[in-house]
Image 1 (tube, rainbow, N blue to C red):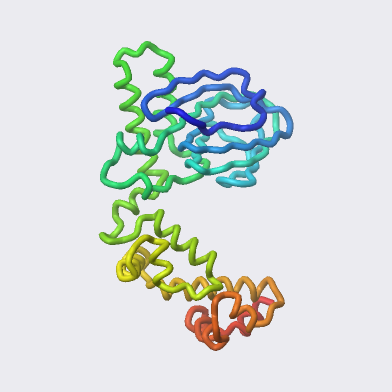
Image 2 (cartoon, rainbow, N blue to C red; image 1 turned 60 degrees about the vertical axis):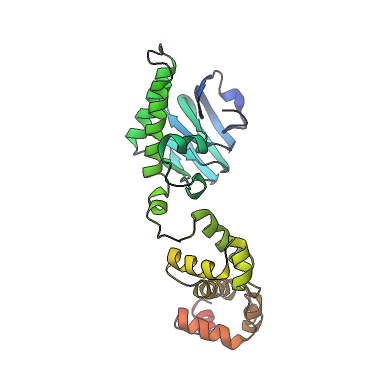
Length: 294
């Protein structure tokens, strides 16, 4: 596996020694991590990365994240950090001590070749999170690391088998794979659905026609409307209405803009249409909503 992998970018001096091994679609590292006082840390990732803490601290530091998966508190033993490709993490640690870590970096395309071939890798989204309750995943990653330091009685077959099991555990417990597999035939992939929703959110002040949204999704207008409803249970028109109302409520609560100005800002040509949508979605008018939330 070549190219940049996930790794802490700052305070490299706090990892005095590091051993590494690699195989088809993965790289695994073991290293001690020293902690001293208040430190700021940054990670970046272009591979699916799993960090396992394998030893306890004499005095466990407190960790607070600023971006990425949320965590605030002491670092517990056997903690696992999962960072999907493209996820950035910034945090700070405060405390003293040394702990041992195992870091596993996985190429998602290769991972799917070993685990599940019935769905596209681009459809699956892995969770960015801290976890302390997956003993199975922790044990498999520890076993893979230990195998690299022993005689390879079965060559690479042993490592390949463990990687396949790790992949299945990640798919089953730390991804949306179940939803992808159970998605109704004709539904949108998570990647396309997310792209459509992001486009609607960013362009909520415009007319947002079905034709332009269909271009974003790469489908015809008919198939876009049909697939979106199958995937979400509601029409694109209904979804846009709810998004307009949602954005309008934020402006009503957090600004002094007039209701007419807000209506224009969230894509309504007529204020009466926004009033009607508010009554349908929230059961009250924009004016009533502002009075309640003033």
